[in-house]
Image (cartoon, rainbow, N blue to C red):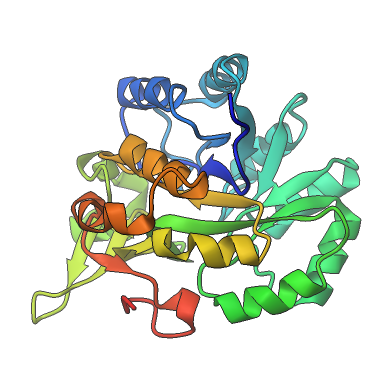
Length: 301
């Protein structure tokens, strides 16, 4: 069997709120895909409890037994002491690498002298930050989604020895987090009595302009792009920049096909143009790649 080529494939953490059965069925499918790394855990809202800590850990063990490298992801925005306690518990979990999505997680993991990876919400904009976090235990970082390939090229020239680089290559872009739940607000509900309306939107709630153009996507306290970032045509550039891992963000449909398409292009089994029309069907509300080219994020170059 021919060895797979780099970069590796990663499936990022599930950003949406799905029923437990749907989550379990989804990851059973993922176990059969060529994805190398799977991120697990709730990163958006602590009220999303269809899967608890033990459920995620059981799923992690199953995926690892099926040959996947599993990373446990932390919350991005912590607002309560209960969330800090949950973070502390997560950071003490043995046997799995932790993805730090805020500096609180970085601090806890650094104190424990544990190697960790960073998600795209950790603002690494220059080589000094990258070098500082490397001293804290960072072993793989994810490029913030708003940065361009030109910035990445500069950072790659001075990245610390042994540091891996990951790039978000498919999915609605996570843009911002707020103490307010926008999904609840859209239904005239208070955050504390949201009635778990996120369950009604397995890929988030699209927000349109007055001209009826897709603009943003509301996902609880998270704001995403309406359009789907697609860097499938940029595989050659990503390889030239020595990117180690490509991150695909889960969605309720076509995730397996998307993984297979990226894997085929990475391993020279197909050209990206082969999937150009299919990519349009797989996208949730159109495609974009503007940030990668140093332009407005919603642009498709």
